[in-house]
Length: 609
Image 1 (tube, rainbow, N blue to C red):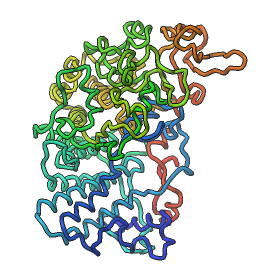
Image 2 (image 1 turned 90 degrees about the horizontal axis):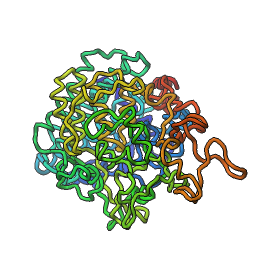
Image 3 (image 1 turned 60 degrees about the horizontal axis):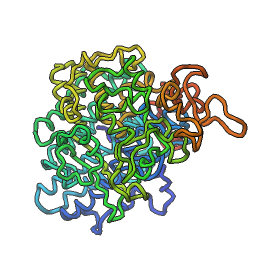
Image 4 (image 1 turned 180 degrees about the horizontal axis):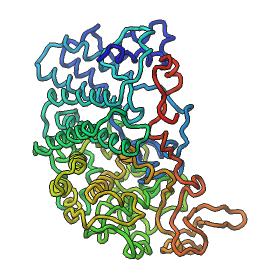
């Protein structure tokens, strides 16, 4: 690699406003350095140094309504919405919203480790473990940058202060992704084998799982953006290179699968096992979880997801599109008259007697426990305000600690774990990579069947499941590709992966742009009959189309007055034209203008900005 491709870190110090310090940022000891000077002299110091990278690397659980966190990170997609708009998917982002690429600050600290870990004495296996962890984290941080910005500049050393080092171009995304995968290959070689996640540290199978994620992301990004001939794929990418990414994803996932160290968690209770996985406070011995973050309110480490979702609202809701994508209990698309009849009575379409049981463990269904001594009411709180309100009529149930009185009552008392990597994703990555490579449908089905069996669903039958309804976004895909995409959406719902999937599939045109997320059927279901002074919504009536004097419309529905079927349409007033996602711009976020100036124009702005 040319020297000038690793020099951009100097820019970051200035972009962060640190160049005004008496001593240049790049000349300073790392802020997180230990007591030794220019040395990491023991394995314990290596461990202590690497520990810092665990602190904020992986997503946690939300602490505020509308905030970030695993359970809320699908917001603004076709899976989930808050009452407020997501700027990126709504097309409302602007250059003034950009921030510095702060990830380079962490990259510098990691590179400092690489230049100094050789000073440590101790067992080689222990030293190698922490070197492997550092390799993993450098790959992880760069992947986050690739997802946001596309090609950046690969930095693999600590650089001296030098104004000239800023005047370099961005590296291609292919170079950066290949460097990420190279780091992961080294991490895989160095990291220890583990058969459970009790250490809560990165191990060999975590690195393999992450490699499968990265390679799948890049293979599909390049394939589908190239097919659209848009501005976002690498212009020199070849079909053989794309195939190589899919093969790397397949092989990394296969290595985890074939190790036989992991399995889909199941106790033989299909109506509970999937949901219980996400509220089990100690996953140390769980066969499915490769890496997770533990919360312990006794140590004042907690979050607030259960307090907000226990209102049956949380000022958010899952979408009709997501609910519709779950198969029937016997493994067919949920369409036509069967769908219409189920929607006539609120909650029936969620029933595990009728639908994939993962649905009722993801969306709150009337009669389920909501908090100690309280069950989910017969109808959703679409007439409430603030965090008591459901935006779509499909409240989130996944992650709700319904049997924990403290968690559902107070902030920062939730202990539902934050799962960073689980075996289910490995199976999904493997199935998708094999499908994209044109592999045997039986092999693909065998990878997905453990997820079906846990939920008490029939084994995969791609032809039976094939949705040919022309209103279905992926109706034109092959039965196998459609199957693996649906299974991924259902299994990973509300785990913060949906936007990445939409972006890498170049699918914003059919899933976001010009589309409005809808909610439950209102007119045409028994919900409407409850909107009377004596009904469920009598305490705060809902007004749509028109409102009496002194009141205002507080519910938006599809269609017009007199239509037989009208669905909750939360963004009808806010986004009359649907999500304003700009297909020529919003697949990547912009680079801060100041950064472009500091590089003397050698960094180019992202397309459309």
